[in-house]
Length: 251
Image: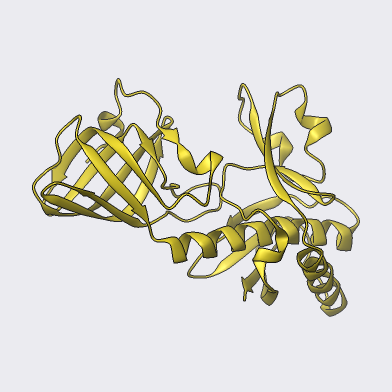
């Protein structure tokens, strides 16, 4: 199915996770529902589910209404509208119906910890290399978390330094918060952030700020304090065509 056709004339979805990543349940209104075999595409007026994108994997969970349940398989964003795709049990929801949305919280919270850990590693990499190192890609979630950096691979001493510095930030219990800035404010506010020259035009940007560490444009979900990350374990380094991938986990 061409999901672009589903969102024609539909207003952008209110993304509840941007304001409260800890929100596990919410009610929403069905705007569009299209069945495809045993599956369904659903567009809601608001959503707690983060789509795949920005280095973050899709959220999972359930939508329930009178006479139906949807088990989410993936969430996509098309022109500001979130399209939810999942297995349908029961009847097809109707436009205007209310649904009860619930997150796979264990998965979401792991993603939050891993994504914040990724921002902390950006800081540790910057300190190790003595400059801001641009990123080429990332997966801040299961099954395997990594960030790809545009630089030569670190040696063993650098890896040790990166791990120690990253976990020092975790232990210090730094506050993590978000702020919105204008394009004019961005260069001064986005401290220690990679890839600023690759940002698409926008009326405002959401910065995820780790107090005293960095402020990075990001629409992902994060923990409120670095202590929640736990312990950052570096799992390996893989040289790539344009740089290297740093694999990591949290525990």
